[in-house]
Image 1 (tube, rainbow, N blue to C red):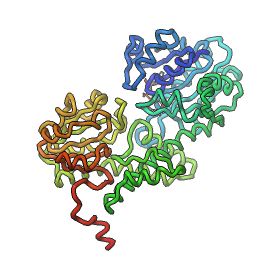
Image 2: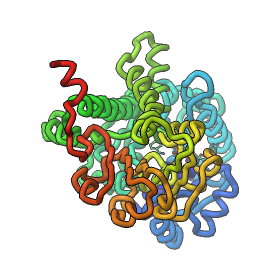
Image 3: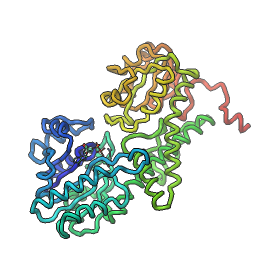
Image 4: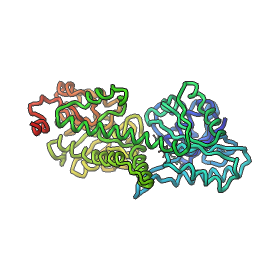
Amino acid sequence: MRIAMIGTGYVGLVSGACFSEFGVSVTCVDKDAGKIERLSRGEIPIYEPGLEHLVASNAAAGRLSFTTDLKSAVAGADAVFIAVGTPSRRGDGHADLSYVFAAAAEIAEALRQNASERTIVVTKSTVPVGTGRQVERILCEVLPQGRFDVASNPEFLREGSAIQDFMRPDRVVIGTDSEHARTVLRALYRPLYLLETPIVFTTIETAELIKYAANAFLATKITFINEVADLCEAVGADVQDVARGIGLDGRIGRKFLHAGPGFGGSCFPKDCQALVRTAEQAETPLAIVETVLRVNDDRKRQMAERIAAACGGSVEGLTLAALGLTYKPNTDDMRDSPSLTFLPALHAAGATIRAFDPEGMAEAKKLMPELDYCDDAYQAIDGADALVLITEWNEFRGLDLGRVKQLLRQPLVIDLRNIYKPEEMLAAGLVYHSIGRPSGIPNTREPAALRAIG
Ligand SMILES: NC(=O)c1ccc[n+]([C@@H]2O[C@H](COP(=O)([O-])OP(=O)(O)OC[C@H]3O[C@@H](n4cnc5c(N)ncnc54)[C@H](O)[C@@H]3O)[C@@H](O)[C@H]2O)c1
C-alpha cells in the first residue's frame, strides 16, 4: 500500500510517520521547502515526544520520505490524504478552506497527468460540513468518474501525546459513499482494527460534523469546570474535589475537568468558531457553543485581573516570573495559547515579565517580543515579585520550593493549573493562589458569597 500525505504539519507528519510504522509506504508532501529539507536531514520541525525516533526509524527503513513535489508523491498512491491547515478566516471566524481547495486542485491535476488506476482522496484536515463534497466537485472537474473516490477521515490526536493517540485511538471515523474507499481505508487501519479499535463508518457529512461536535463538547466541559471553579472560590469549595466527585460518575467522566486559565491551542477556539458559523448558516444556532467561546475569551482576559489582584491590585512596576507559555505541556505550539492574551495585558499594565517555557520560546519570542526570556525556571523566578505558573510542564511540578522562596522578592505564587497542594505551599512559607481552591492561607474570613447568602 502506498499513500501520500499533503501537508506535513502537526497532523500530517505524525499521521504519515504512524502509517509508515504500520508498514505502509508514505510520502509526506509540504510546500514549505525549508521544512522538507530539515525533515530529509532527519530534523523534526516541531516538538512532539517520540516523533524523532519514529521518523528516523521509518525513513531508514525506506517507508517514509519527504518531498515538495506533490505530483511524484501522488503518482501511484492508493490514497492521498489532505492534512493542510484550516485556520480561522480573518474577520468572520469561518474555517479558511483555501489551503484545502488548493491542495485538492493540485491533487486533481497530478492525478490527471498520471495513469494510475483509482485513487482515494481523503480529507484529514478538520473541515466544515460540505467541504468533502466541494473537494469531490474539484476532482470531478478534471477527472473522469471512476478514477477517484473521496472520503473524510478526521483526526483526533492531541499534541503532546500524538503518537500514542494515533496508534491507540478511541475510534477511527471514516465517512464515504464508496465501497472501494471503505475497503482501502479499512486495510490501511488494519493494525488498529486488530486492536479492536472501533471504526465508525458513516457519510462524509456526518464524519465532518463528528470532529467539530467532539471538539465543541470537550471545550464545553473545560469551560463548565472553569465556571464551577469560580463558584468554588466564592463559596469556599474545592474544584478539584468537585471534579473528582462528578467525574467518577461514568456518565460524566473524569477527563477534561481540570480548571485553568481557559482553553487555547490550534483547534478548540477555531473549531468552535467555525462550528458556530456553520450552525448560523444552517439557521440552527448553537447557543451553548457560542456561550462557551464568549466565556472562554472573557476568562483569558480576566486572568490578567486575577494576577493583578493577587499582587495587591496592580502589577505596575512589578516583575513577574511566567512559567509555561504554550497552551499545554509537551508541545511547542503557541497557537491561541491563553498566555498570549494575559501576558501582554500585564506587560501593558506596567509589569516586567520574565518568561520561560521548555519548548515554546522560539515561537513565543515572535508573538510576544515585549517579554524578557530566561534560560530556565529559576532564572525567571530570581528577583521576581511573584511566580505565575501558566502551563503544567512536568519540570514545573517539582520545583524546589525552598529555592523558589529564596529567589522571589516576595513569596507569592499564582498557580493557574493547580499543580501544587495549598498545604505544601503554606509549609514552604509561600503565599499561594490557585484556581477554584481554598488558598492555603488560614481562612479567617467567611467567603463573600456565603456572607451574602447569610
Ligand atoms: N494540531 C492538532 O493537534 C490537530 C489535531 C486534529 C486535527 N487537526 C487539524 O488538522 C489540520 C492540520 O493541522 P496542523 O496543526 O497539522 O497544521 P500545520 O499548520 O501544522 O500544518 C499544515 C501544513 O500544510 C502545509 N500546506 C499547506 N498547503 C499545502 C499544499 N497545497 N501542499 C502541501 N503542503 C501544504 C503547510 O505548509 C503546513 O506545513 C487542520 O485542519 C487542523 O484543524 C489538528
